[in-house]
Length: 214
Image 1 (cartoon, rainbow, N blue to C red):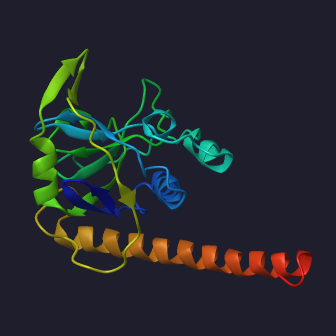
Image 2: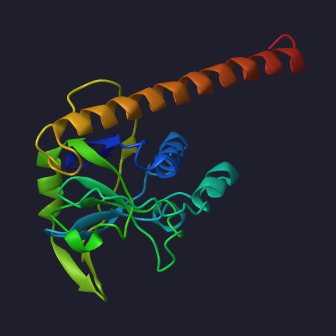
């Protein structure tokens, strides 16, 4: 979940289509790389793009965050179409240069199909997306950018809720395919959180052993 001053954007992921990208983005969310980041690009009818965490945050990255932010993910291109609500990785000319910047599509963009990695879609927040799309913008080079900073206030994980909906309809194999992708994404997220809880238990044991009495 991305929280902005306009409201929340709920995101779902496609680990069966883009497993490396999904794992990388989930890890970035876990470490808070998008907290305090910004939508630096808002091009009506095209994309709302989140800034690379290395340059978009209002606070510096710590060492662990920087290590993840510097990871380059290979291009996991598929036959999924770029339609409104699609989540698509940004990259440079090198197809394997994606890091933490990604876009929420604001309209259909068939020229991106097969060229940029689709790894999920927005599952709720159309009203928020419409407000975001309506901000005043300016042209800077090839980019259309908001005149005022559009910050991500905070992010968090949430299980359950409605998936499918009308946003991004037709991006894959229809509603049934979207539901299956959403289920697999939720299972992957649950597994990740269970592993983190187990690691926290082990960490507490180590702390208790090394710092008796605390």
